[in-house]
Length: 461
Image 1 (cartoon, rainbow, N blue to C red):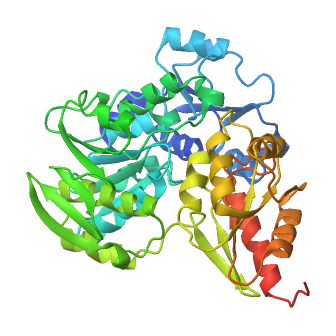
Image 2 (spheres, helix red, strand yellow):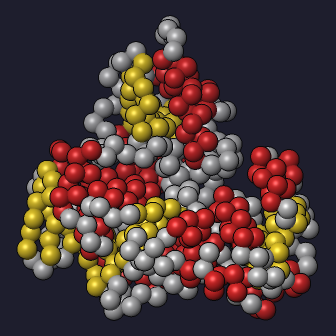
Image 3 (cartoon, one colour):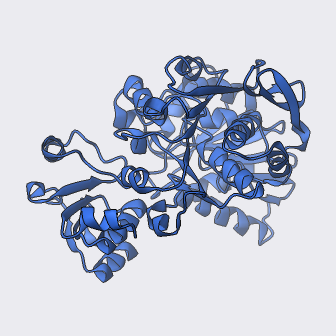
C-alpha cells in the first residue's frame, strides 16, 4: 500500500454508510490503511445475510437499522455508497463539515494508472467489457471494474502506472465525483433513475462529471445520433470523438452501409462487416463502435478491436440466449431496467416476441414502450409493481393480447403457453427489480432456472 494512503488514514475514525459490495471492499482497504471503521446500514442484521458474517470477521463496529446515521459528527470522514440520497438531513450536515467521500472517489485519488470510464443510460456494461477485452487483446495489462460489480479499490496495491483501468460509472457514482477519467464514453441519455435524481436535469448533470474535470490532453467519445450527448461536445475540455449509426463522422466511428468504419481526421478504415459482429442488435453495434473509438484512443489497434468483435458473445443478462424448448427460443435481458433498454431489445429480433415485462417503479414513462409493443410484440406478460401502468399504456392504444401475473414463475408459464415454434420469449422488464428481487442479476438468474426447468423435462402444451 502506498505510504501516502497510510499517512492519510492511519488512526482516522471513518463512518461507512451503506454496506453493498463496493463499500465492503472499501472497508477492507481503509482498515488495512489503519482506519477505525464504523460500518452502517439502514438494513437490519437479517437483511445483510452472509455480508454480516464477513463484516463481523473484519472486527468493525456495526450500527444497523433506524439509528444508522446517528453520531456522524464524531467521525473524521464519512464515506457513502452510490445511490444513498444526499438530501438526508444527517448527511447534509456531515457534508457541511467535510466533503463526503466515496469508494470511486478514493480510487480516482490513488490510482497510479490511467483510467478510462464509460457511462450512459444503456450500453455501459457491454461497452465497458468490450473495451477491457480489446485492450487485453492489444497486449495491455487491464483491470475492469466499477459499477460492473468489481470494486477496484481492492486492486490498488497491484496497479502499476503502465496498466490500463476501465470503469463502468453510474450516475450515482458520478454525482459528486471531483475527477474525470483520462478517456470517457457517454453512450446515450434517456430517462432513468428519476426516483432518486428527481429530474432529468439532475440526472444529466451527474453524467457530465465523466468529462467535466478533464484537461485538454484528455478525450471524450459521444453518441452523435443522440442530440443530448452530441451537444456535450461543445463543453468538453479535451479532444472529442463521435460514434454514429446514422451519420458520417470525421473523428470516431460510424456505420457505413454494412461496414463498421473507424475514422481519424477523415481517413476511414473498415474494422468489421456488421454481419461479422457476434453481438445481436443495432444497439450492440453502436456499443462496439464506441468501444473501438475509446480503445484505439487508449492505445489499442484496430486489429484487436476486430478480433474481439468477431468473438465476443456478450455479457450475462443482456440479450443472453438461455435455451430452446419446443421450437421456442428464450432470452434473458434482465438488465433492461428502463423502457429505452427494452425498446432496443425489441428491435434486435425479427422473430415474433412473447415479452415478459414489469417490475419496480422508477417513475418513467411507458408511452414509447406501449407503441413498440403494438408494433413488435405478439403477446405481453406483465408482473410487478408497474404491471397495471404498462397495461394501461398499452391498452390506451387499442386492444392487445396481454395478461397480468403475480410472479416470474407464472410469467414463464404464461409465456410458454402463448408461444409457438419459431417465436422467442424475451424477459426484458423495462423496470428495475427491487419490488421482487435484490437486483437484476438475481431476477435474470431466476429466469434462467425457470427456463432450464422447461428444457429438463417434457412439458405438454
